[in-house]
Image (cartoon, one colour):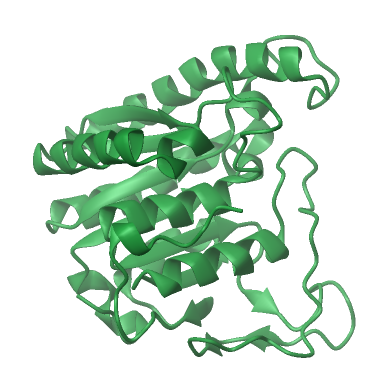
Length: 272
């Protein structure tokens, strides 16, 4: 189905929610509980929910006694292996309160670039959702290299939304909406609605996240929103603490209209 406004969100059949590293790691790890509350509420009303979660590397930082996010690939891969385990344990422990089972799905760019692995990923995701499992997706940082990385999980989330034919993509961060310029600057105005095809002329879109542990910013979210919208999914950009309001259809965040006609998987937006 095509969602026309935020009020349509409670009737969505499939939703992809993406949360960033800064929202679920470090001192913000406590936000996992309220995030799961919102996802479980949507799941309980029959919506098929997929969570795309960053945070494996950031979660591992204190366990590996690192001063910050590692810069070399080998340490990033090692941190991802440790952090992904902890992150999934935290999600499943929280989901246990609702009797919801999570399923871990790790993907690389090549999985969605090539027809056979993409078909396999689609089939697996469809089956998980049919079994009422809540898939938790992340980039497979343990085997990914700089050449094949998605670059940020906003893009991964958009491609997952396209892959499964989601009705809605919710991109969560530490900012409540998209603004005409970085929101800490004087004169920044919230953008409430973006029509399909709107190039956002005159909008100053920053490329760096504020927390320092993730890889995405407003620029990656706008790019991801355009990918998802072109495949037929509406997009909502808002802050992680507002996820319950977002999934209940409240008038918050920045809304991107979906394309009038949904693209099929064979008409996927190019990755390059």
